[in-house]
Length: 244
View (cartoon, rainbow, N blue to C red):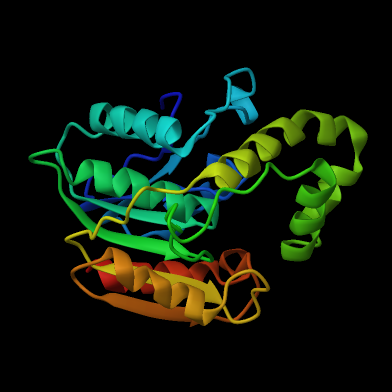
């Protein structure tokens, strides 16, 4: 266990699935994936700064800063050469893409598959100008729209004061994130989403075809933006089949 990752060792693993959380999210959201995954898949979850046991660590100001730091840590942590696959949810989709394109420049490191969930592909600076950082009120309104039940923790002042800084930093990072151009990855990409997601349509999922030279698959599950909570077993079975 390191600052950047949480994982449960799987001695018989043939591939390592690295999971990137959503804005405001933490590695703990993938805690039970390790027990649900088959023995040939080792699950590793990214722990962004500014949350849980990393509460005192400063949050990165830019996507480049975050992706560079994760890539460095990942190269150190996965020196055994086991093939990798990435799963990113919401903001984590963009982070996973940025780490994937950095990893593509590293000889001898194999990324087999990128799974992106509940988010459109990044918009370049030519397509869309960076937005101003949203206010706390705008952030909370968006969170309530996507996750009405989970947003209840923000109604408790003692919890809100503890977790709001990381959420605020993540939304600020996303508002400013506009890559200069898109990079086509030489790996298959699968875009996943919920059929009732108010923030990510099937057309948004199709947009990821612009970042792969190996073809895009799309799979839609029953549920909203956080469909992966209620459809966890179904989702992991699908990912396992894709990686087999």
